[in-house]
Image: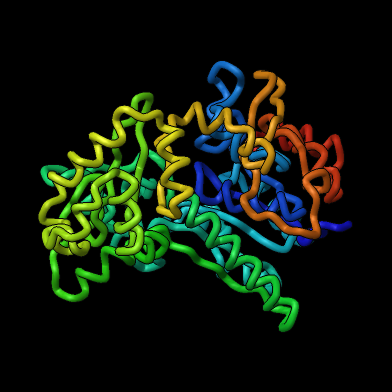
Length: 393
């Protein structure tokens, strides 16, 4: 069984999270990923001088890729890129605005020479934005998108440590690339695919944008919800649970679960709107019910009642969950200088592709495939040695 993107070659200039997560997913679909990295240092996340030879985060996002070192400031390295592009289908990059142009590898240059190439670009902000020159990390986009202003507690906003925007940007790049490949199949023409992190972040604010667009000010509520009451994180005897009593039907069931049928006839608790005015008192009742019980017992009871809930788990508990391994969300792998590692799998599961058929190559050492890839495009061993001596590779 061939994989969906078998035969597709991607030249990957990605770094940190967004673009590497994009090419991780393309690799899982069968694309050949040639990852271009600066000699000696590698891409920004690699950090080859760390104990173990690389940053663990880098290893997690870069299995199933070939590492080729090129000094893109060297004119001979740029010619090697052009040679690679003769047999390539896609470029992926997420450099700061203007950097690829400084290497002579901007979209206009590439499109003029390789009109079938799909040039996928992940940026913090759209091309031409007044913020285009800002260095964009997930937390800076959390700030500029409004995420931080609506996350946290009434007296202060907070960022999330999880890189949701980076990963969302990578996933949107995948969607754009797949659409562009279909379009090229119909027209024979490549195109530029651009995804801006800010554009990814804003739709995620839909439930917050709705009141704002109607002229209402959104207030931070910590772990509560502006339209649903009760919802919060509650203590158990051995941890915490999140319970979200989403509908009025849920409320009627939940009140009975707690043994507080009297609340159902109390006008102060008749619906979400009025319950919000008594959220503190209601949370006290819920805490009195949850605190003596074990976390997993609460989850079983509430889940069986059909009410949205979840255990508040520590990350090490999630990593140890057998379901994470069974679904290939984290996959056992190795790295030469570190030994056993676990890498990220694709969340996209396709019924026609078994787990055994998906690529299982370990993350590459820096420049591990330089000679192999350069030889495949006709560069001799002697010329490779010369390029290395000149600092081009």
